Image (cartoon, rainbow, N blue to C red; front, top):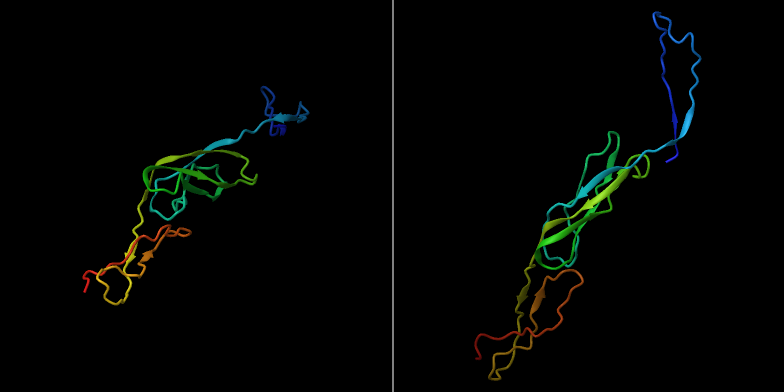
Length: 170
């Protein structure tokens, strides 16, 4: 609001003559009541499918509507899953879009549009037996702990109830 406005470029031609503006002294006055409103654009999340990795990050970038000529998308931003857990029809939400418009992005009103077609699938985990030796004791249990992995970063085995057993007792 309060944008200055100036008239310019007026041409007056006398009726019935080729004389242009000779009978008039043109004075241009300014007005400080101009308003430029933000242009509405959408940033829309896109579908993504990933294997469980313990976080909500998506590697797919959201799509930004077309901008005014001369302006650019400096950073399309990110999109995230609603939770880190395995499921289908997960909601993906875009955010953090940066527009380069010479006005810090303030010429645009951004609406972020979610997408509910995200999928996080289960991560495969292996449980490997380790070598062990023991003296015969009548059962097939082992004192060795199996090797479990790989797990998502920051996650660990809560309860090591997994045990190794020999396939034969003797």
